[in-house]
Image (cartoon, rainbow, N blue to C red):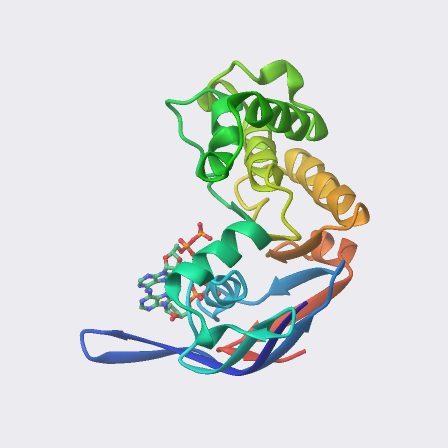
Length: 220
Ligand code: ADP
Ligand code: ADP
């Protein structure tokens, strides 16, 4: 469970202040599938970064499973982040010099596990997204939809409780987007909490709840 209470975030660039988020109150419960929608620049990515402990709020409090994170060191925050969250992005963020299987193993390199264990977990994650036959390929030998499925396998390989997705279907045609959405729905049915930024109303309607952001505030 993640709780944001009166959270604000301001960016300072060249003495110009941008209020990216103001007074956000939001609770995301275990097992939910939440879509975040709103126009470009309204603060969606900032909100996702705060939810994923990639950034700290300017004001307000964030609690994960009842624990307030502002008391934590950066190191503790990073540990919590790696244990709790998987991330996927619009532009996949795969490493093109590494084979698919090696991309998926990457998050496990920071854990105490053997090469054999890593390989097994990565194979299971790839099977789950239907890409067992592509393990030895390189990312740029795959379609966009397949690359995003590799990214989902990489995000899920450490078995995180929460998957955070920033416009996961934004670079995909509607067919591939629907496939990716189906995988996210399946992961959610199996118990993973999913928070997704999207511009696609159809995908948002398939999720459990839509949070609308406008000009740094939650409007519904
Ligand atoms: P969205 O994801 O909805 O497009 P963002 O959260 O990326 O919105 O941005 C919200 C506002 O904060 C925008 O005005 C954006 O330009 C600004 N912003 C976001 N990140 C930064 C940053 N690192 N430095 C300065 N301004 C930023
Ligand atoms: P994506 O399209 O992959 O979702 P974006 O291109 O929206 O990502 O943003 C990439 C990163 O740049 C985000 O972490 C966001 O916070 C940051 N960012 C967005 N707007 C600005 C800005 N005006 N200045 C600096 N950084 C920004």
